[in-house]
Length: 303
Ligand SMILES: Nc1nc2c(ncn2[C@@H]2O[C@H](COP(=O)(O)OP(=O)(O)OP(=O)(O)O)[C@@H](O)[C@H]2O)c(=O)[nH]1
Ligand SMILES: [Mg+2]
Image (tube, rainbow, N blue to C red; front, side):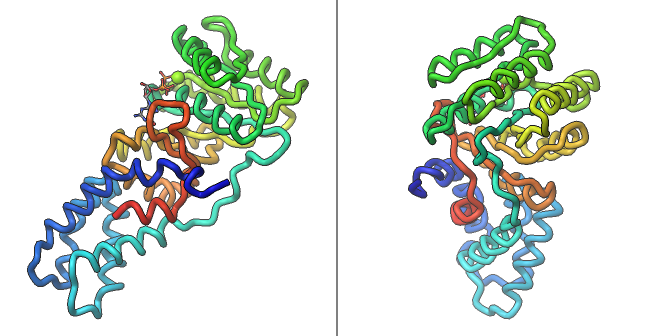
């Protein structure tokens, strides 16, 4: 597959973050002489792009070290050093995404409205375009519109959707979908789940149950459990990830709505603080608006 196809929209969707961060750093330093102590001044710009204070401080310390001997600092030199330090922070070696087997099951989780259903629709098309036979389980039985929404995505992309009745136990819908998935020649089963707030205990228990039932019917753990986070929600997403991690073993993160946000910095924290791979990026509302994540392209487009 050609590289521009895999990462088609990643660079484009970082435009806003890049513009704001770059402009802020340039305007902090202006044209005057800069010395290493001035590097501290970029902290606010980093935090505004949604890098946590802790990570921003670490980045600043390491940029200062990197440039300690440089007597002729310019805004561009600082940006380049920052880019390299970000690159170091996010170039963590994670296992490959588990989508290469004959059969793989992904569960998609997250709080309300972050873009789970849209992401399931897009992922369905993404894998179908790559020759996989995909089936979707509509396990959001909580909202009537949730089921219809994913069925519309199924019609749009030509992907089969298994859905239950309104208010049916989502775990039983998941069970039926896994049975069908096992019996026929499907390759990828995508499980859409209802939005749930991490502090709602019974909803979090429901999620644990969905996972348990899937593991039991499948005969092994689901291959990936992705948490979807909305780039616009910033640092709050880190709390969400922490809480979901306590209930199910999150294996990766999908960051949506990066297209409308200047807060791409959150990705650095997810990788370096949460130690989770970012697998996909949502870059819009159309079926093709999904891109694989690449640390290199992210780094090159952040500044
Ligand atoms: N711009 C943009 N909008 C997105 C993206 N992903 C989702 N959306 C929009 O975000 C809104 C919510 O998306 P849903 O997919 O319904 O979110 P959800 O997490 O399934 O919501 P609940 O099931 O209610 O928890 C919709 O208007 C989507 O079109 C994205 O990557 N970019
Ligand atoms: Mg939904």
